[in-house]
Amino acid sequence: MIRYYLGLVERMDPLFSQGLTLMMYGMATVVLFLLLLVVAMRMLAWFVSLTPPKSERSVFIQAPVSSTDSDEETIAVISAAVTRYRDGA
Image (cartoon, rainbow, N blue to C red; front, top):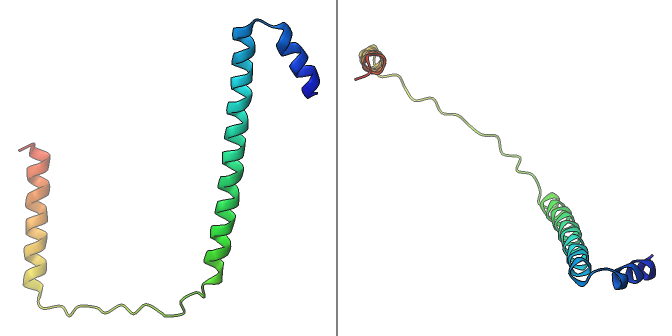
């Protein structure tokens, strides 16, 4: 196969043969890079799987509600902002 390719390249125009050779080098480089990337990703996945998972449960602490005045004030501020946005000001 390679001998056949080299025979064809020798009979072609030099510029065309250089283009084909450059294309082959480029394609080989891309394939090697992608293979290296796959190997690196698999190694990273293996390395991450070695670390034990954290078994801690997250605890959510609810902030105490101070009063309904702040809720009403927040609603008023949000309503004013929406009204101003809709008016285009």
